[in-house]
Image: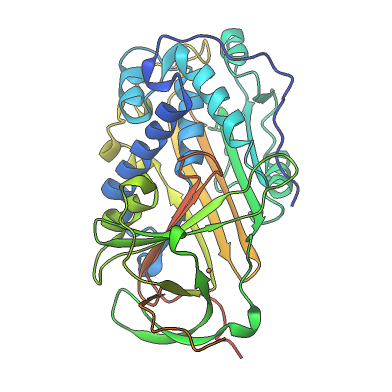
Length: 391
């Protein structure tokens, strides 16, 4: 996969008075806050994909909206700050710091570009030193960049650019990583999976043992963490699979995936075996209509104030995200494109207590950086995982 790049030679971020975004931990909490609200107030209720499954990138949405919020002022900035933890002049340094931190995760690419047909304030450009600005909004060029930056996982911008699109800010996160300990493909076999509607079908399921240290329970949900190898540029990602109680939905289960593992309880067993379906999830989410439920109203109205972005009056016309997640024996692959458009696991062993975690019903997935708690990607597998039955 061709990875998006950032300008590592850009100037270091400036000091900021915004306590909510001045360090790694608070930025992570800001993304977690967005993830919690987005899933609870919109995704879990709106069922953006058939069967209730979805994959999304809270980190991608945060980076895109926060970058736009760097040009917001007045009431528009106050609404965006309540959701994102930052806006106005302090948002630029926060976005830059967050993107650089995420880029330290091996095999993860992070990039943001702005294409504009209207003048962009010099101060706004300087506040986002790692963002490339293009003064020509060419849909074919945008699609080509998206395709290259995601390694073909996403073929084009998930939004039609029209004559009314005056500016498009596009963020891309792309991950391709191998498990530290891959699943043995010879152990993959068809096992039953019961979807959210109660229908049971055979799906290709991978199996292996998991160290006890990588399994814990939070609020009735089991969390299993699988680590990926680090790339040449940094540590590998961590993927958490979250299995809730039967009938529990995404809004209740997924937050356990980014809850501090110190808050978890180790199961009182001797070993853990894992059964996990192979899966591919792809979702396109129209976030625009979800913004009011997230407390953002002015930014999409004629009363929007983005005077720190452009001297011309602008409002958000569309916020769209397309995300894809693939989980297989060798590793995990994921990508998300978020666009904000603006308009006008030898003697006979003793008996053991075994915890067998079969992800044979709806479950959650959370992808985190190696050394942080930012939810890069989150997913909810509610319907039968896609892909042919194992031969």
